[in-house]
Image (cartoon, rainbow, N blue to C red; front, side, top):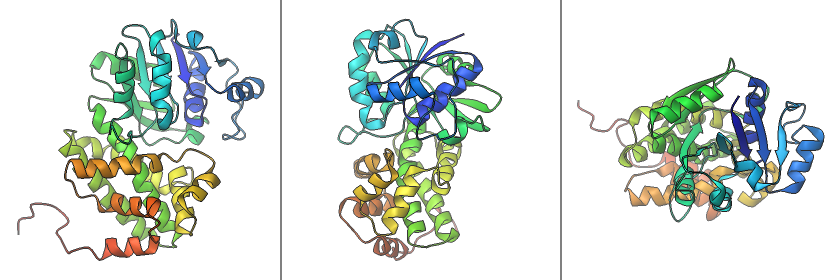
Length: 334
C-alpha cells in the first residue's frame, strides 16, 4: 500500500484520489481552503461531481506537515495558476528525492515554464514527473475506461508511478518526453477554446475537424522546435487529449468557448463555467512561445485576439479562412 497525498481538492485531484482509494492505496487529500476540506470530509462528495460518493477510506487534512512528511507520492492537483505558490509553500517539508507528480496542465505566463519546471525550480530536491492524457474527472471518478501517460526523466520513476495508477479501468503508458507531454496538455486547452467558439457561432463538424487537425499541427510544430518528440503529439497527450477536449461537454475550455462564440466576454464565460478555464491562462504564454521560437500559430493567435482584445469571433474565423494559400504538408515534392 502506497502513501499518496493529493494536493488540491478540485475535481481532477478527487477523481484520481478516488481511483487510488478504490485500488486500496492510502489516500490523503490536502487543501489550503478550509471550506473545501470541510465539504469533502463531511459529505464525501464534491459539488462539481454530483451523484458520486467518494471512497470512505480517503482522509482529509489542512496540515502541511501531515500532507508531506513520510508520503511516498505527492500528486500536485491544484489549478495551474496556484502551482508555484503551492510548491513554494510546501518546499521546506519535501524530502530529498521525494516523488511529486503534476497532474494539472498549463504554461506560466512570463517565464514560459511548464508546471513540472515550476515545481522543480521551487522544490529542487524533489523527483518530479507528469501525468497527462485524454481524461475527464467526471468519467474517471466513475471508474470508466481511461488511458493516460506518465512522463518522467528516468525510467524507474515512470514505471513506479505507472504501477501505482494502473487499474482495470485506468491504463497507464510511460514516456520520457516530459516537455512534449506537458506542451500538448497545455496548448490543447487553447485550441479547445477555438473549437468551442466555432460551436457557439453555430458552425458544424467540418469546422471542428479543421480546428482539431490544424490545431495539433500548430502544437506539434512548436513542440518539435522546442526539442520535443513529434510522436508525442500523435499520441494520447497530443491528438488524443485535443480530441476529447474539443469534442466533450465535460470540457470547461470548450464550454467557455461556446459562450464566447455566443457573444459573452471572456470574464462572463469564465464566471458562468464556474471552474478554472486553463486555456485562458495558457493562451498568452502560447503566443509568447510562438514568437520566441518563430513558429506560425494562427489559431492560437486568433484566440488571443478574441480573448484579450475583444476581437469579433466570426471575424477571427473569417481571417483564418482567408489566409494565404499554402500546401498542407511542408516540403511537398510534386
